[in-house]
Amino acid sequence: MAWPEAARSFVGTLLRDFPRPLGPDDAPPWSPAPGRLGSLSQAEAPAELAELARTFLGSRNAPPLLAASLIHAAIHDILQTDLNEFKKQNVEGEEAGDHETEPLLDGGPLQRCFFNKLWDVCCKWQKQPPPPPKPLHRYLQVSIHATRNTRRKMEDRHVSLPEFNQLFGLTDDVDRAYFAVFDGHGGIDAANYAAAHLHVNVAHHKDLLKNPVEALRESFQKTDEMFLAKARREKLRNGSTGVAALIVGNKLHIAWLGDSQVMLVQQGKAITLMEPHKPEREDERQRIEALGGCLIYMDCWRVNGTLAVSRAIGDPLQKPYISGCADSASFELTGADDYVLLACDGFFDTIQPFEVVDHVLEHLMQNKGDGLKTAERLVAAAKESGSSDNITVLVVFLREPKDIMSDCLRDPRSCSADDCTGNQLLNFFSSEKNH
Image (cartoon, rainbow, N blue to C red):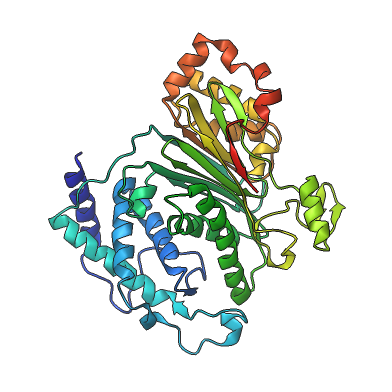
């Protein structure tokens, strides 16, 4: 279906289901996590509202480009509103937090206002759809699968945004796509927060256009600082590791905190792009001990006897030993790249990078080159190998899975696990790494 017809069809259906804007006593049609939008700062509002709308529109099967364009328009409109009218009255210091300097907004009325802005945009677009968004020049196919596994709670979150440009109104001719995996510990708040805010902080970073990898790296620290402010006012103690990939033109930019990882497969070879933040890393051990912390071995090395990672978003009781400063790196995409894979430690603790290549190829051969359920196959492999943790796998194919399979079948040596050792598992030689 062409863009104007698709836009009119979707917004027409939405307006039939919601024939009028919300009144002051009406509940918004989405269900945020309990307490998530009770109080929030003005700086947090755009990301939190956009996340609600992304979930809501996704549940109604909105085409992703259309959903991103709708959200961008509605966020633009609500930011023209004086948000001071949503200020919470008589906020005591206990709720605001000792370090809170920005007044808090009442999430209930703000959500209703935002839904009405979205409703207004739908009314306008039903009459006159906007010009079609620019599609990506680069081929991307995304496969995602996540499971709670044997754990009591699911504390992983992931984000897939091939429509990054549309969500943030970037109209230049440069492809951008964003992907991330977050692995929470001690609760889900930090992972939820990072999944809603990190990409927004990247998009609003002053250096996004001229230095995207620095924008990505610094946005991790900003997200950490924002969550710590929320943690102070809401007495939260949990944290989250995270890894993010930002594709800009022919460059792959990555940044990470903790032991969630990203890897690249190029012409059937597994390329390790990063080194996770583990306490036993010599540089991490020295940093922690210089701050007065210690490492204690309790089934694995732990910072001050608690966490098995040395960097993360959140964990306010373990700052500064648990650092919020991310590492980052950039890589040239040559056209011979097969796919990028992001996953949490529940995957990488049981599956080695070279094994990924074998599992993906086997899956493609069994499914005639269909890559859509590749992540599901990889999650199953991790479970079969003994993982009991939450598992999230996000695979971004950079060329047709059928072509990847055909190339490996033509030259089986190019996909041999024996070749995926030694130098191939060192940091990619063309990287630019920032510590």
